[in-house]
Length: 373
Ligand code: GDP
Ligand code: MG
Image 1 (cartoon, protein in one colour):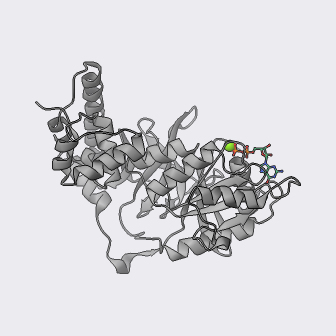
Image 2 (cartoon, rainbow, N blue to C red):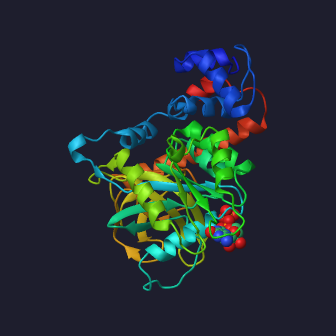
Image 3 (cartoon, rainbow, N blue to C red):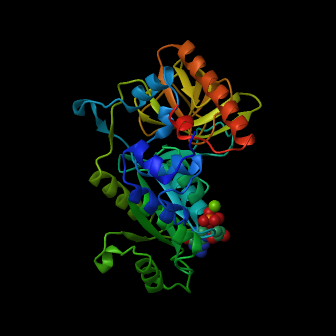
Protein backbone atom coordinates (compact mmCIF):
# COMPACT_ATOMS: atom_id res chain seq x y z
CA UNK A 1 0.00 0.00 0.00
CA UNK A 2 1.40 3.32 -1.06
CA UNK A 3 0.91 6.68 0.63
CA UNK A 4 -0.32 9.60 -1.50
CA UNK A 5 2.47 11.36 -3.33
CA UNK A 6 2.35 14.26 -5.73
CA UNK A 7 2.85 11.75 -8.53
CA UNK A 8 0.10 9.33 -7.49
CA UNK A 9 -2.33 12.18 -6.92
CA UNK A 10 -1.48 13.56 -10.34
CA UNK A 11 -2.15 10.18 -11.90
CA UNK A 12 -5.37 9.67 -9.96
CA UNK A 13 -6.73 13.00 -11.13
CA UNK A 14 -5.26 13.02 -14.61
CA UNK A 15 -3.77 16.45 -13.95
CA UNK A 16 -0.11 17.51 -14.31
CA UNK A 17 2.09 17.19 -11.22
CA UNK A 18 3.25 20.76 -11.86
CA UNK A 19 -0.27 22.04 -11.24
CA UNK A 20 -0.30 20.24 -7.87
CA UNK A 21 3.11 21.61 -6.93
CA UNK A 22 2.04 25.11 -7.81
CA UNK A 23 -1.09 24.86 -5.64
CA UNK A 24 0.92 23.35 -2.78
CA UNK A 25 3.16 26.38 -2.94
CA UNK A 26 0.49 29.00 -3.39
CA UNK A 27 -2.07 27.62 -0.95
CA UNK A 28 0.08 25.91 1.65
CA UNK A 29 3.47 27.62 1.20
CA UNK A 30 5.11 24.25 0.69
CA UNK A 31 7.67 23.45 -1.98
CA UNK A 32 7.16 19.79 -2.80
CA UNK A 33 8.89 17.33 -5.08
CA UNK A 34 7.12 14.82 -7.27
CA UNK A 35 7.77 11.92 -4.90
CA UNK A 36 6.87 13.79 -1.76
CA UNK A 37 4.18 12.28 0.45
CA UNK A 38 1.23 14.58 1.07
CA UNK A 39 -1.49 14.28 3.66
CA UNK A 40 -4.95 13.15 2.67
CA UNK A 41 -6.63 16.40 3.74
CA UNK A 42 -4.11 18.36 1.69
CA UNK A 43 -4.55 16.05 -1.29
CA UNK A 44 -8.33 16.52 -1.17
CA UNK A 45 -7.97 20.29 -0.92
CA UNK A 46 -5.51 20.37 -3.82
CA UNK A 47 -7.86 18.23 -5.89
CA UNK A 48 -10.72 20.62 -5.17
CA UNK A 49 -8.60 23.56 -6.26
CA UNK A 50 -8.14 21.73 -9.54
CA UNK A 51 -11.86 21.16 -9.77
CA UNK A 52 -11.68 17.44 -8.98
CA UNK A 53 -13.69 16.29 -6.01
CA UNK A 54 -12.10 13.07 -4.84
CA UNK A 55 -14.45 12.86 -1.88
CA UNK A 56 -17.20 12.03 -4.34
CA UNK A 57 -15.29 8.91 -5.26
CA UNK A 58 -15.18 7.66 -1.72
CA UNK A 59 -18.63 6.16 -1.72
CA UNK A 60 -20.81 4.45 -4.19
CA UNK A 61 -24.52 3.82 -4.22
CA UNK A 62 -26.79 6.44 -2.72
CA UNK A 63 -23.93 8.86 -2.37
CA UNK A 64 -23.42 8.73 -6.09
CA UNK A 65 -27.10 9.10 -6.74
CA UNK A 66 -27.25 12.16 -4.56
CA UNK A 67 -24.24 13.69 -6.25
CA UNK A 68 -25.89 13.12 -9.56
CA UNK A 69 -28.93 14.99 -8.30
CA UNK A 70 -26.73 17.81 -7.03
CA UNK A 71 -24.73 18.07 -10.22
CA UNK A 72 -27.53 17.42 -12.66
CA UNK A 73 -27.36 20.10 -15.34
CA UNK A 74 -30.50 22.07 -16.06
CA UNK A 75 -31.70 22.89 -19.53
CA UNK A 76 -31.05 26.53 -20.34
CA UNK A 77 -34.74 27.22 -20.96
CA UNK A 78 -35.46 26.19 -17.35
CA UNK A 79 -33.05 28.73 -15.91
CA UNK A 80 -34.18 32.02 -14.46
CA UNK A 81 -32.17 34.86 -12.96
CA UNK A 82 -31.49 34.43 -9.26
CA UNK A 83 -30.25 36.93 -6.67
CA UNK A 84 -26.47 37.13 -6.17
CA UNK A 85 -25.05 35.61 -3.00
CA UNK A 86 -22.54 38.00 -1.49
CA UNK A 87 -19.97 37.50 1.26
CA UNK A 88 -18.50 40.43 3.18
CA UNK A 89 -14.80 40.13 4.02
CA UNK A 90 -12.15 42.46 5.42
CA UNK A 91 -9.85 43.31 8.31
CA UNK A 92 -11.18 43.29 11.86
CA UNK A 93 -12.81 46.58 12.91
CA UNK A 94 -13.02 47.89 9.35
CA UNK A 95 -16.80 47.78 9.60
CA UNK A 96 -18.09 44.45 8.22
CA UNK A 97 -20.69 43.94 10.92
CA UNK A 98 -21.80 47.55 10.82
CA UNK A 99 -22.15 47.31 7.04
CA UNK A 100 -24.25 44.15 7.02
CA UNK A 101 -26.36 45.49 9.88
CA UNK A 102 -27.11 48.79 8.20
CA UNK A 103 -27.85 47.12 4.87
CA UNK A 104 -30.24 44.79 6.61
CA UNK A 105 -31.91 47.45 8.71
CA UNK A 106 -32.33 50.02 5.99
CA UNK A 107 -33.40 47.59 3.32
CA UNK A 108 -35.48 44.90 4.95
CA UNK A 109 -39.13 45.63 5.51
CA UNK A 110 -39.40 46.61 9.14
CA UNK A 111 -41.84 45.67 11.80
CA UNK A 112 -43.44 42.26 11.52
CA UNK A 113 -40.90 40.12 13.28
CA UNK A 114 -41.76 38.11 16.34
CA UNK A 115 -38.65 39.46 17.97
CA UNK A 116 -36.63 36.30 18.45
CA UNK A 117 -33.14 37.65 18.00
CA UNK A 118 -30.73 34.95 17.13
CA UNK A 119 -27.57 34.88 15.14
CA UNK A 120 -28.37 35.51 11.49
CA UNK A 121 -26.22 33.57 9.06
CA UNK A 122 -27.59 35.22 5.95
CA UNK A 123 -30.37 37.46 4.78
CA UNK A 124 -31.85 39.00 1.71
CA UNK A 125 -32.38 42.68 0.91
CA UNK A 126 -34.18 44.35 -1.95
CA UNK A 127 -32.98 47.31 -3.96
CA UNK A 128 -34.96 48.74 -6.91
CA UNK A 129 -36.96 45.51 -7.10
CA UNK A 130 -33.83 43.37 -7.26
CA UNK A 131 -32.91 41.02 -4.47
CA UNK A 132 -29.43 40.50 -3.02
CA UNK A 133 -28.42 37.84 -0.52
CA UNK A 134 -25.70 38.57 2.04
CA UNK A 135 -23.89 35.80 3.85
CA UNK A 136 -22.49 36.83 7.17
CA UNK A 137 -19.52 34.47 7.40
CA UNK A 138 -17.14 34.99 10.27
CA UNK A 139 -14.23 35.81 7.97
CA UNK A 140 -11.96 34.63 5.22
CA UNK A 141 -11.05 31.40 7.02
CA UNK A 142 -14.68 30.30 6.83
CA UNK A 143 -14.90 31.48 3.24
CA UNK A 144 -11.93 29.28 2.28
CA UNK A 145 -13.08 26.37 4.42
CA UNK A 146 -16.46 26.36 2.67
CA UNK A 147 -14.81 26.46 -0.73
CA UNK A 148 -12.35 23.72 0.14
CA UNK A 149 -15.40 21.59 0.90
CA UNK A 150 -16.79 22.32 -2.53
CA UNK A 151 -19.50 24.54 -1.05
CA UNK A 152 -19.06 27.45 -3.41
CA UNK A 153 -22.07 29.48 -2.42
CA UNK A 154 -20.49 32.91 -2.84
CA UNK A 155 -21.04 34.67 -6.17
CA UNK A 156 -19.37 37.91 -5.15
CA UNK A 157 -17.32 39.39 -2.34
CA UNK A 158 -17.55 42.83 -0.79
CA UNK A 159 -14.14 43.69 0.60
CA UNK A 160 -14.46 46.27 3.36
CA UNK A 161 -11.43 48.55 3.72
CA UNK A 162 -11.51 51.32 6.30
CA UNK A 163 -10.44 54.61 4.73
CA UNK A 164 -8.53 55.66 7.84
CA UNK A 165 -6.52 52.44 7.94
CA UNK A 166 -6.00 51.10 4.41
CA UNK A 167 -5.07 47.54 3.51
CA UNK A 168 -4.21 45.55 6.65
CA UNK A 169 -3.05 41.92 7.08
CA UNK A 170 -6.56 40.38 7.01
CA UNK A 171 -7.44 42.57 4.03
CA UNK A 172 -4.46 41.14 2.16
CA UNK A 173 -5.38 37.59 3.19
CA UNK A 174 -8.95 38.12 2.05
CA UNK A 175 -7.70 39.42 -1.29
CA UNK A 176 -5.56 36.34 -1.86
CA UNK A 177 -8.43 34.00 -0.96
CA UNK A 178 -10.77 35.85 -3.29
CA UNK A 179 -8.21 35.72 -6.10
CA UNK A 180 -7.70 31.99 -5.61
CA UNK A 181 -11.46 31.50 -5.78
CA UNK A 182 -11.95 33.60 -8.91
CA UNK A 183 -15.05 35.23 -7.39
CA UNK A 184 -15.64 38.86 -8.47
CA UNK A 185 -14.96 41.47 -5.81
CA UNK A 186 -16.22 44.97 -5.10
CA UNK A 187 -14.36 47.13 -2.59
CA UNK A 188 -16.33 49.14 -0.05
CA UNK A 189 -14.07 51.95 1.14
CA UNK A 190 -15.65 52.44 4.54
CA UNK A 191 -15.70 55.13 7.23
CA UNK A 192 -15.55 58.01 4.75
CA UNK A 193 -17.40 60.08 7.35
CA UNK A 194 -14.22 60.29 9.42
CA UNK A 195 -12.14 63.48 9.09
CA UNK A 196 -8.69 61.86 9.06
CA UNK A 197 -9.02 59.58 6.06
CA UNK A 198 -6.70 59.07 3.12
CA UNK A 199 -8.52 57.82 0.03
CA UNK A 200 -5.40 57.86 -2.12
CA UNK A 201 -3.57 55.64 0.34
CA UNK A 202 -6.38 53.07 0.19
CA UNK A 203 -6.23 53.04 -3.61
CA UNK A 204 -2.43 52.77 -3.58
CA UNK A 205 -2.59 49.95 -1.02
CA UNK A 206 -5.09 48.08 -3.18
CA UNK A 207 -3.01 48.55 -6.31
CA UNK A 208 -0.01 47.18 -4.41
CA UNK A 209 -2.10 44.00 -3.88
CA UNK A 210 -2.81 43.80 -7.59
CA UNK A 211 -6.32 45.08 -7.08
CA UNK A 212 -6.41 47.96 -9.53
CA UNK A 213 -9.30 50.40 -8.89
CA UNK A 214 -11.49 51.14 -11.91
CA UNK A 215 -10.86 54.86 -11.46
CA UNK A 216 -7.22 54.04 -12.20
CA UNK A 217 -8.09 52.01 -15.25
CA UNK A 218 -8.40 48.69 -13.44
CA UNK A 219 -11.24 46.23 -13.05
CA UNK A 220 -12.21 46.66 -9.41
CA UNK A 221 -14.97 49.06 -8.40
CA UNK A 222 -14.17 50.96 -5.22
CA UNK A 223 -17.32 52.40 -3.67
CA UNK A 224 -17.05 55.03 -0.92
CA UNK A 225 -19.39 54.27 1.96
CA UNK A 226 -20.09 55.02 5.53
CA UNK A 227 -21.61 51.96 7.09
CA UNK A 228 -22.29 54.08 10.14
CA UNK A 229 -24.39 56.84 8.60
CA UNK A 230 -25.52 55.09 5.42
CA UNK A 231 -23.65 57.19 2.84
CA UNK A 232 -23.01 55.32 -0.40
CA UNK A 233 -24.93 52.18 0.48
CA UNK A 234 -27.33 52.56 -2.46
CA UNK A 235 -24.34 53.03 -4.71
CA UNK A 236 -22.76 49.87 -3.30
CA UNK A 237 -25.95 47.88 -3.90
CA UNK A 238 -26.19 49.21 -7.46
CA UNK A 239 -22.58 48.26 -8.16
CA UNK A 240 -23.25 44.77 -6.80
CA UNK A 241 -26.38 44.37 -8.91
CA UNK A 242 -24.49 45.50 -12.00
CA UNK A 243 -21.73 43.00 -11.28
CA UNK A 244 -24.34 40.28 -10.78
CA UNK A 245 -25.95 41.15 -14.10
CA UNK A 246 -22.61 40.79 -15.89
CA UNK A 247 -22.23 37.30 -14.49
CA UNK A 248 -25.73 36.11 -15.45
CA UNK A 249 -26.51 34.20 -12.28
CA UNK A 250 -29.24 31.70 -12.98
CA UNK A 251 -30.90 28.65 -11.51
CA UNK A 252 -33.76 26.30 -12.21
CA UNK A 253 -36.43 26.74 -9.52
CA UNK A 254 -38.42 23.71 -10.71
CA UNK A 255 -36.36 20.79 -9.49
CA UNK A 256 -35.64 19.13 -6.14
CA UNK A 257 -33.74 21.64 -4.05
CA UNK A 258 -30.02 21.34 -3.43
CA UNK A 259 -27.79 23.74 -1.57
CA UNK A 260 -25.50 24.23 1.37
CA UNK A 261 -25.78 24.53 5.13
CA UNK A 262 -24.29 27.82 6.31
CA UNK A 263 -24.54 27.00 9.96
CA UNK A 264 -26.35 24.73 12.37
CA UNK A 265 -27.27 25.04 16.02
CA UNK A 266 -29.50 23.53 18.65
CA UNK A 267 -32.49 25.53 19.79
CA UNK A 268 -34.20 24.64 23.05
CA UNK A 269 -37.67 24.87 21.63
CA UNK A 270 -37.15 23.86 18.04
CA UNK A 271 -34.45 21.20 18.28
CA UNK A 272 -31.83 21.12 15.61
CA UNK A 273 -31.95 24.21 13.43
CA UNK A 274 -29.99 24.75 10.22
CA UNK A 275 -29.41 27.81 8.09
CA UNK A 276 -29.64 26.51 4.54
CA UNK A 277 -29.13 28.37 1.34
CA UNK A 278 -30.88 27.01 -1.73
CA UNK A 279 -28.69 26.91 -4.84
CA UNK A 280 -31.02 25.21 -7.29
CA UNK A 281 -34.63 24.17 -7.07
CA UNK A 282 -37.20 25.15 -4.47
CA UNK A 283 -37.17 23.84 -0.91
CA UNK A 284 -40.56 23.16 0.63
CA UNK A 285 -42.02 22.20 3.97
CA UNK A 286 -42.37 18.42 4.06
CA UNK A 287 -39.39 17.76 1.78
CA UNK A 288 -37.20 14.78 2.70
CA UNK A 289 -33.69 16.11 3.05
CA UNK A 290 -30.21 14.77 3.63
CA UNK A 291 -27.72 17.37 4.81
CA UNK A 292 -24.22 16.07 5.51
CA UNK A 293 -24.74 13.50 8.24
CA UNK A 294 -28.23 14.72 9.13
CA UNK A 295 -31.59 13.89 7.61
CA UNK A 296 -35.27 14.55 8.12
CA UNK A 297 -38.43 16.14 6.82
CA UNK A 298 -38.41 19.94 6.68
CA UNK A 299 -40.85 20.73 9.47
CA UNK A 300 -40.78 24.53 9.44
CA UNK A 301 -38.99 27.24 7.55
CA UNK A 302 -38.20 30.82 8.61
CA UNK A 303 -36.53 33.81 7.02
CA UNK A 304 -34.01 36.08 8.77
CA UNK A 305 -36.86 37.88 10.57
CA UNK A 306 -38.30 34.62 11.85
CA UNK A 307 -41.27 34.89 9.50
CA UNK A 308 -42.62 31.46 8.59
CA UNK A 309 -42.22 30.44 4.97
CA UNK A 310 -43.75 27.64 2.91
CA UNK A 311 -41.00 27.48 0.35
CA UNK A 312 -37.56 28.83 -0.52
CA UNK A 313 -36.46 29.56 -4.11
CA UNK A 314 -32.82 29.73 -5.30
CA UNK A 315 -30.50 32.09 -3.35
CA UNK A 316 -32.89 32.45 -0.44
CA UNK A 317 -31.31 31.64 2.91
CA UNK A 318 -33.73 29.98 5.33
CA UNK A 319 -33.64 28.59 8.81
CA UNK A 320 -35.18 25.12 8.87
CA UNK A 321 -36.20 22.67 11.57
CA UNK A 322 -36.85 18.95 11.28
CA UNK A 323 -33.38 17.49 10.83
CA UNK A 324 -32.47 14.71 13.28
CA UNK A 325 -29.15 16.30 14.21
CA UNK A 326 -27.25 19.56 13.74
CA UNK A 327 -25.45 19.72 10.38
CA UNK A 328 -22.20 21.61 9.93
CA UNK A 329 -21.20 24.68 7.92
CA UNK A 330 -20.43 23.67 4.35
CA UNK A 331 -22.52 20.47 4.40
CA UNK A 332 -24.38 20.02 1.15
CA UNK A 333 -28.08 19.25 1.29
CA UNK A 334 -30.34 17.62 -1.25
CA UNK A 335 -34.03 16.84 -1.37
CA UNK A 336 -34.64 13.15 -2.06
CA UNK A 337 -37.81 11.45 -3.17
CA UNK A 338 -37.70 9.09 -0.25
CA UNK A 339 -36.90 9.65 3.44
CA UNK A 340 -35.42 6.12 3.67
CA UNK A 341 -32.73 7.10 1.17
CA UNK A 342 -31.97 10.21 3.18
CA UNK A 343 -31.74 8.20 6.41
CA UNK A 344 -29.52 5.52 4.87
CA UNK A 345 -27.14 8.05 3.41
CA UNK A 346 -26.88 10.07 6.61
CA UNK A 347 -26.15 6.87 8.54
CA UNK A 348 -23.57 5.73 6.02
CA UNK A 349 -21.80 9.04 6.34
CA UNK A 350 -21.88 8.88 10.13
CA UNK A 351 -20.36 5.43 9.94
CA UNK A 352 -17.71 6.61 7.53
CA UNK A 353 -16.98 9.56 9.81
CA UNK A 354 -16.26 7.15 12.64
CA UNK A 355 -14.04 5.00 10.42
CA UNK A 356 -12.11 8.10 9.34
CA UNK A 357 -11.61 9.20 12.91
CA UNK A 358 -10.37 5.74 13.87
CA UNK A 359 -7.97 5.64 10.94
CA UNK A 360 -6.64 9.05 11.80
CA UNK A 361 -6.08 8.13 15.41
CA UNK A 362 -4.36 4.88 14.52
CA UNK A 363 -1.82 6.94 12.57
CA UNK A 364 -0.01 5.60 9.56
CA UNK A 365 -0.22 6.96 6.04
CA UNK A 366 -3.57 6.88 4.26
CA UNK A 367 -3.39 5.38 0.82
CA UNK A 368 -4.72 6.57 -2.45
CA UNK A 369 -6.99 3.54 -2.42
CA UNK A 370 -8.45 4.76 0.84
CA UNK A 371 -9.35 7.99 -0.86
CA UNK A 372 -10.54 6.48 -4.08
CA UNK A 373 -12.51 3.73 -2.33
P1 GDP B 1 -15.80 44.44 11.88
O1 GDP B 1 -14.82 43.92 12.89
O2 GDP B 1 -15.17 44.56 10.53
O3 GDP B 1 -17.09 43.71 11.87
O4 GDP B 1 -16.08 45.97 12.32
P2 GDP B 1 -17.35 46.58 13.07
O5 GDP B 1 -18.52 46.65 12.19
O6 GDP B 1 -17.51 45.87 14.37
O7 GDP B 1 -16.85 48.06 13.30
C1 GDP B 1 -15.72 48.37 14.09
C2 GDP B 1 -15.83 49.79 14.63
O8 GDP B 1 -15.85 50.71 13.54
C3 GDP B 1 -17.12 50.03 15.40
O9 GDP B 1 -16.84 50.86 16.48
C4 GDP B 1 -18.01 50.76 14.39
O10 GDP B 1 -18.94 51.61 15.00
C5 GDP B 1 -17.00 51.52 13.58
N1 GDP B 1 -17.46 51.80 12.24
C6 GDP B 1 -17.94 50.90 11.33
N2 GDP B 1 -18.29 51.52 10.19
C7 GDP B 1 -18.02 52.83 10.37
C8 GDP B 1 -18.17 54.00 9.55
O11 GDP B 1 -18.62 53.95 8.40
N3 GDP B 1 -17.76 55.19 10.10
C9 GDP B 1 -17.25 55.27 11.34
N4 GDP B 1 -16.89 56.47 11.77
N5 GDP B 1 -17.11 54.21 12.14
C10 GDP B 1 -17.49 53.00 11.66
MG1 MG C 1 -17.60 41.95 12.88
